[in-house]
Length: 131
Length: 486
Image (cartoon, rainbow over all chains, first blue to last red; front, side, top):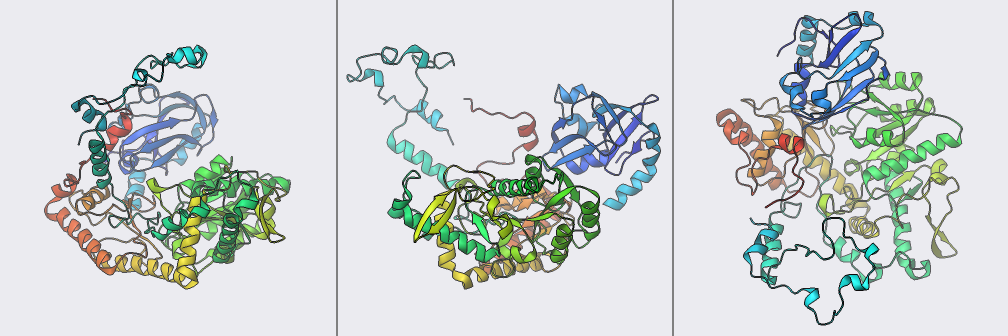
């Protein structure tokens, strides 16, 4: 299983990639997509809303279960991945969780919160313990 | 097997057209004004509806053949956890079809005294079984009962002038519980299970203390099949902070005559008559989800209620703070007759023995299987237990195991639920199964595990002996075909 070094990770299995001062991409980890199984639908919260850390971003529906994805940091949803929202190509979340299968782009309201998240090594240990 | 439409093509036309009939001299649009005729939906009145046309014997053969392809509790073992697919005794069907019960809901109460008496007495009997003070039989399913119950909770706090925002739901709850809370416009606070598979008292107390909580929704025994030993502490904590406790009665089959939700401290409960009380379930429904409350909530029950006064039964709008009607007429009456029959046939002793045997059967299977499979919370269970997929080899999954069971003539158990067990396999045998059936089922599961080691392909390709093989459920969900096309 793959956990890129340039990302930060949350305990609820989201990753976040800082792209600019306050802009970041958010998705779910390889571990999370593997646990959920094939994603068949994603129901997003509307873009433009202010969210606190831990608020729901979207609900992922897989053949096994429905799971919520949470904001790893506080901020506003800037954009929803159009390949998911419009093209409904949900297999991207399984096949490319860190790249084409990103979920949302956010404007962080407090990028200091990034330091509360785990780095790749710590997250890997966290996943090992969860197994 | 061909569909009835395909068969129709093979047959010579034998049908009669209404327009051929000498009795109808006029065309339809000469009789009914145009504005009432559907002409703009692509199947206007002048077009022929394409209906299948086969001879009587072909018709009979088609549907009899289809009926033999059903799997039901009348054809085999059906260990679907948390669903209590127990046998539906045929005497229930007999009583439900007695001429005296074939009433019309608009008949006056004078003419249906017997039916009302049955409903009234059923409410009393459910009160006795559960330790509650009053019941409504209106809700037509478990989730409908939940909605009724949480609506009562909401109205209760509204009347008290308190605004509450959240309902607590443990992570081992049925999916309908958080859905119900959301339908009633409550937020959901999920609390995790501790290492014993029970509600974490610390988390519960913290949530009650810090948030604006209306109450808790709880199933006991929970979906791991475990009786929460802290149940009295749980309801005490919820009450101490001014909340109410709701009991999801889906797992009541383990509790009859042993433990009453009313005595566990619950204020509102629902029962699933189509589970515990042997009425048809699934496609055989409809269901029934009566709601019971403690005395202080009686006035909130849905109107009308069944009242016995002056030796006469009536349906009356007596509940002063009622949440209103939740179902047309008064519940699924035919189902209520069946459940009443079951209770009378079993009697007090019989219901207790049913729960005892349900628990015994589950524990028998658990002990047979825990040598081969991992049972994460391996202690005395109630009417069901949950195994994980950990000991399956060669990347065989819970889904593969479930499909392989079909090849051996068993219905699959509930899989991937509850979510707190990885690759969950949730087995509920119910009380009606013989030791021989349970032994065969356990041997089959052991055999499947061996297959996963020696011939994993058997699992991955399963089922091979059923009418329809392995379906691509991912494709079916991502690109559903909703219409049959030749």
